[in-house]
Image (cartoon, rainbow, N blue to C red; front, side, top):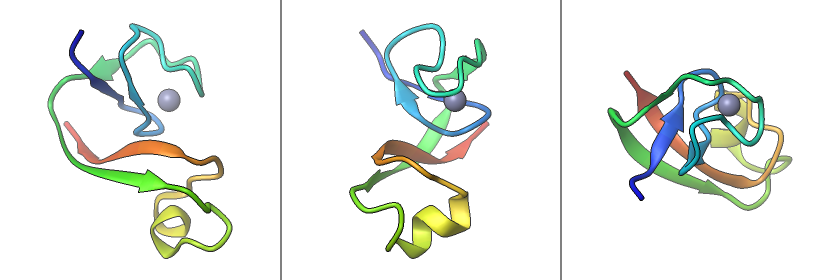
Amino acid sequence: MSEKACTACHTIATSNVCPKCKTPTLSDDFSGLVIIFDPEGSAIAKAMNIKEKGRYALKVR
Ligand SMILES: [Zn+2]
């Protein structure tokens, strides 16, 4: 199953609904992959407004 990225929160998911924010719009047209281990201490997580650890796409179209 191919991975998709949530258009709202950028979470990478293989389901049709985002497991984090329940948004049903996921796009397979995304680029960049960031893995956040420490949302509190990560500048990327802050910039992307990420509060939970996980895998995220940098850009989602
Ligand atoms: Zn989401």
